[in-house]
Length: 257
Ligand code: XBP
Ligand code: MG
Image 1 (cartoon, rainbow, N blue to C red):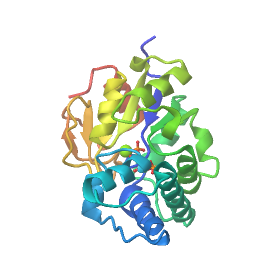
Image 2 (cartoon, rainbow, N blue to C red):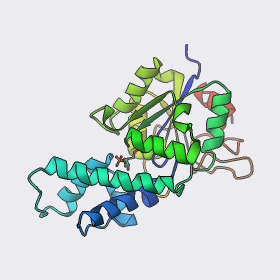
Image 3 (cartoon, rainbow, N blue to C red):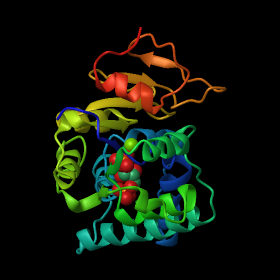
Image 4 (cartoon, rainbow, N blue to C red):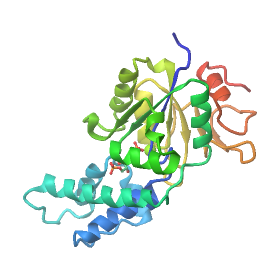
């Protein structure tokens, strides 16, 4: 059956703006705590985001920006240790409630639940980071709103590979045409499209200029009746926000003119 049954959400940049004031700050704190002088400023971090996965990002930084850095013998453990330290700081940041959900996210999740749509997550970050965000920014039982949380190293090939979305679909026993994906980045869209999912993009400061060709709709945010979205790519819509009715129309191809 081709009917829309599920929504699959990316996390970082899509559910919340976790990167600049979350992961980035936590990486820098972890570096400082380890006695390293590395500092990832806003602009550099935007470039580093081209590589998904925190451990992969640290390696990429050293390979590209600090090729002369003397790598410790236990290099894998060194990178993993820094990454774990980053995640501890990140969890503390989330616990202070400092990172809210993006506009319209709570509204859409609540509407989707009420409409009986199944919810899932497909992200590069770890299950622990996802749970912490959902617990602190959505609800105490926020993680339980999602039937499947496909996260982190559960598949070896991270986005832009399609594997994480394919894994989520397999767990839900769904075909790609029975779900929609929500993403914020080019790597994310390549991943969801690669898995065969129609994809809606909400852009952010880091991803505004990315190439989203193939996405069915690109907006600056999910929006609200009194705070409408801006359409950056896609059909002309007589709508102010992404709601369940619009999702059904998008899914059925018959996007309203
Ligand atoms: C975004 C990422 C992640 C985060 C950091 O993932 O690429 O690497 O920047 O998280 P997505 P980790 O948009 O798919 O949620 O350090 O845990 O990888
Ligand atoms: Mg993202």
